[in-house]
Length: 102
Image (cartoon, rainbow, N blue to C red; front, top):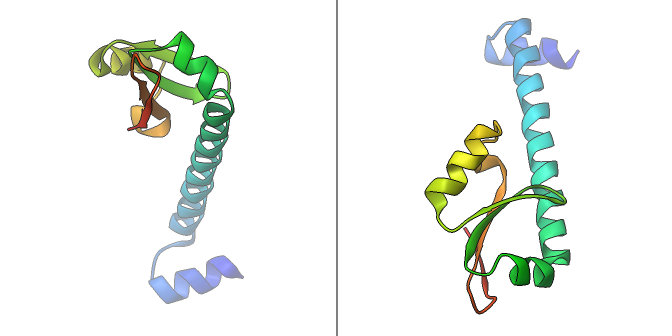
């Protein structure tokens, strides 16, 4: 019923509606994973500050991180893992332990 309404209202095919719904579900999953990664980052902040002082850190998933002294190398590491940088939490820890969300 919902697809029929969208098809009539927008003039797109049912297949396009199904594809849009699949894409939306995929994006929701990305957001859910980002929120989990952010929560994990916050709950492990002190430990991570100590371990990765002076580095850029990508939290791919809770407990899964990549780190590097520069963004270019970090992005290459993510690329090698098949991870899009825009779909992870990236932060930088200063040598003094201050964090900045990028």
